[in-house]
Amino acid sequence: MPSGRTHDSITLWSLPLLAGLTFARTQSSSLTLFVSGSYLFSGLMFGPDLDVYSHQYKRWGLLRWIWLPYRRSMRHRSFWSHGPIVGTVVRVVYLLIWVGLLGTGGIVVGAIAVQLISQTNDWFALAQQWWSSSISFLERTPQQYPMEAIAIAIGLELGAMSHALSDWMLSTYRRAFKRSPKKAAIIRQASDSSTASPFEGNGAKPSSIAERSQPVIPSPPTYREPQLPPFERRKDEE
Image (cartoon, rainbow, N blue to C red; front, side):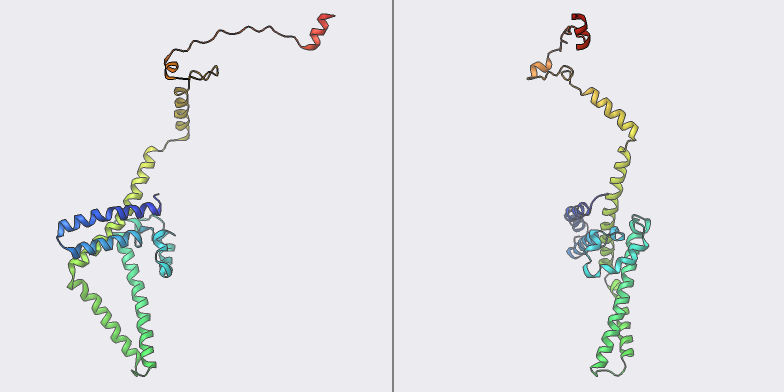
């Protein structure tokens, strides 16, 4: 699979192209900013590789622990993490759950702190009021800014798709050019025999291009007189 640096390079190099196409299509700088920002966030911190110990996971810093249940419940490169649209939706819902839990805890702690400094007599009623205001704000925001919400969703999905597509393309390339060990050995043997130099047999080495182009004439075999072992030679002399 591509490394984390490769995925980061793909995200950063494709960002100007995405921003240019978005601005040419919408003629809106705000929508271009929302698409580009969410695309950058998705490619660097909110992508499919949050299901493993990756660069995206480590960039969350002190908050990386919130992704531990996600990592342990997801098989790497599964449909629920790397699938189109589904993976982004699952991560958005998962993050919203954590935002709700942490927000609820902050509201409760804040309401208790307000009661401790004697500015209210009922921290629970104050917490309920803050909670209702937060929920109504989250519900009104997409309705008041529908185009911005769509731009953010498109940017998040495009960032995830760039990651998943690069994984898929590299896997397809490796499967297409993968050879069996037997076939690789036959191809390697044929390559060695075709590239073998004719000068390797007699130890000679061509010194120039002209010598390489001339035909090689094998040298005649040299005759060597057979020699007897020392013991039999002394026997003949006697």
